[in-house]
Figure 1 (cartoon, helix red, strand yellow):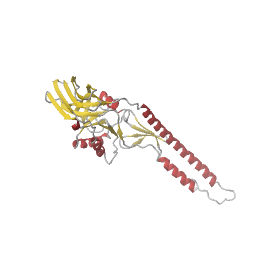
Figure 2: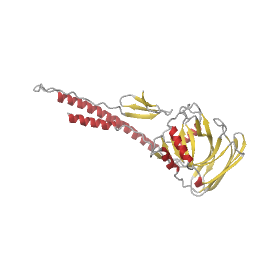
Figure 3: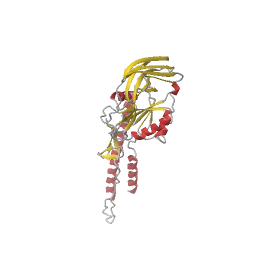
Length: 359
């Protein structure tokens, strides 16, 4: 009987280790590289010019964040540390779609970010994309630290080859002007050319993560043109842009986004969903198996320990069934970015940013 108890406890312990786990991963993307970063201040001289070779352009780090996101603080600290010691520029994309708590972003910018990264990542901050080719979600390091992870991504070259970029801005009035751009490249790719309107710092004292001052806010993305040939391309466009959230510290950043053929990832996503369903079903099956085993042990114990009429003096030892913590049946994030768990005992859990609360 003791051997049965030990075996059952071993099985139950093994089953308790099979619940879903979360681990940070570096996602390699196929949604087209993003490069550029030449920029000027809108509140400066009326005529501004910037230029760079392709190889000297900075790494573009897109920080998907929100003013309520406490987990984003450690991510942004690591990003700032890397940017201060390397050729990397940070752009904060504030979650805006179905998010009334964050006033700093825009639904159009949020939608463009999601379009480029969908369906590779969940839409819960924090997420950091690097040059549109790699992304890391969450605030759990893949390596020894987030800073090391980000520095490794920032050091990856896009191998753009020889060429250069030039950018000119002529102010024609309040919130208006003419953008002129030129690029020489031999990548055999097509590109969308756009202007990112970035607020240097926006102050929002009511942000529930307590940061207060939020830097590098992408307020608007303006389409400038299309490149569909190698060699030298250029363009010019008169534009107008919206006000900053506060102050007068808007910047204009020239960006290029590679156009890639649409990849049929629906099947891959469906397979992933099926895999998750299979894991969930497997977990449920294993939990049910554990219950059956415990029931069988109870029956066996009852039969074995039942008094034999010829052995009236035998002492009956009651069977003790070990209790285990409930396992996770399902975990999801709602449209407001809150993470929930459904447990095997029918209860629920909610992540408050520090620990799991039972609901």
